[in-house]
Amino acid sequence: MTAEQHREGPDVQPDIETSANSNRARIADSFVAARRAGGALPDYPGDRPTALDDAYAVQDAALARHGGTVAGWKVGRINPPIGTANRLAGPIFADQVIGGDPAPAPAPTPAMPVYAGGFAAAEAEFLMRIGTAPDPAQRHFTRDDARALVDAVHIGIEIASSPYPNINADGALVTISDFGNNNGLVIGAAVPDWRDTDLLCWPVELWINDERIGAAIAADMLDGPFGAVAFLAEHLAARGKPLLVGQWVSTGAVTGVHPVAVGDRVEARFDGSYRLACTITAST
Image (cartoon, rainbow, N blue to C red; front, top):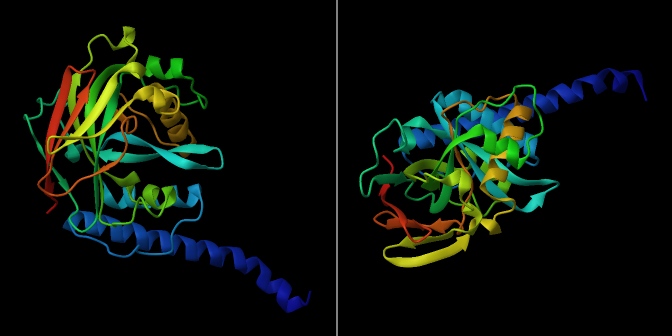
């Protein structure tokens, strides 16, 4: 190695980091601007993330630029897994949450916006409200640990929407980079006896325009809704982010991710007795 090569070597890593940060900033700026404008992004606005850390770095940059109050977190499945990671997380902002104590109950069919020209879907999910904040020093959580954090379980509908139409098709890393593809949450009725109920066996259905589109049970979802809470607690601890009392955890699509269009009516049915509906409108 020559003296000149030796001098240039230490500058390579900073240059790479500067380029990566610039790319993350460009992606975050583009997604936040498109979401604020209610518009679409036909092309991904940068070089796609190539690793989980990279994807979450974009998400963190977008969180800083957005500045909204995080009312909760969505958890989604990574299939196939990336290494040992089989779930992902993204923020849910307070101004996109309908219902939930102490807020008033949602209207019979609240209007939920999606990005026309982007990606839009609806998901039937169990929603967990955090009643006890985890110990900041704790790094591993079991499902029993997760249960101890939760003080309420509700039925719900997650609205998955992004200005970028191929957010799901491009894989989990791209999904993570745009707030995990979340664009709202409808919080339905509480499950009063959830501590003594086997939620894993509840039949769950999602209907669009009076047609049943999906049906499943939560037992088919990895290790179930409380497993999702355990994942999220570990995940946020690793990122140095708090899981706060009062935040909601949208624990994953029970029946799948079902595409919707402006004008659709979505209804989620749980255990044959709990129902929740919304209509799909265009984001403005």
